[in-house]
Length: 72
Length: 270
Image (cartoon, rainbow over all chains, first blue to last red; front, top):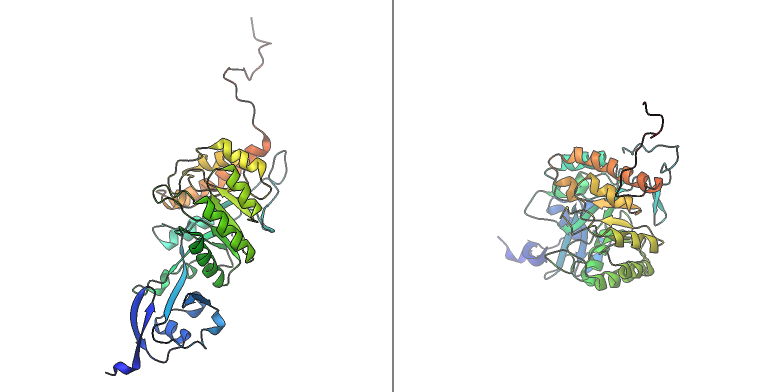
């Protein structure tokens, strides 16, 4: 086990250890989610979908993954 | 999509589509997607309702559960016009944040704006609603604003540039029907933009009564989702909305607290 390969991010309201080196896209895919069905708020700014593959996830990042659910 | 069978001829037939923000809708019923027992029942009920515009909420992905909970796994944006809402927001800032997230999903630039002011009644914070409406209209959103039955607020929301103003019939999820028909009528009389009664409808006669006030449409969720048979109730609501619209256009007879015979009083036998 190599702790150095993990970083801690704040993901959907919880601190979470993830493998270092993720882009936002690979992070989403590692969670079994479809990037096309998820909206990303990255450090309080909305991240356009065409940037998912280029933004590298850094330690301490605040990431919100949201989607549409039933509502009135 | 199932479309309501509206008579195409005859005095009072409603052949005009409902146009909101330049977009025409045949159905004057807008439905939500919350609180259904299953996604299958939700989709079947929406189809039965004939609604073309369907509201959805923006929420965090629950990372502890299956990814399929997202509504786009069940509702096709090609079949329905999905309207993201800001339900659950208590400040203008939060509502703007949720609206932007909804738009970033890439479906459209519309939002059902809802800023709640009181947890017990879910009545809107009208000042925050107007503030958020101004911001969102400035950012190019087409805003359909949930509001209370207050005329001045409705006028302010129209001034802010909302494409529709949506006064409540009664509190969200209450099923109490139209508690203030006079002010619903007055708001409709005074506004140029479409007026949609949003929230509080419980059964088909409530939808009819709302439409009989002259409003342009009705938005509902719980009345379908919480019915014992949501699909059957969706059919009922489809008919109820059409009935109310046609009755409004037809112009009802004056109500009189006196009996007037329908058959001739002359020509009776000795």
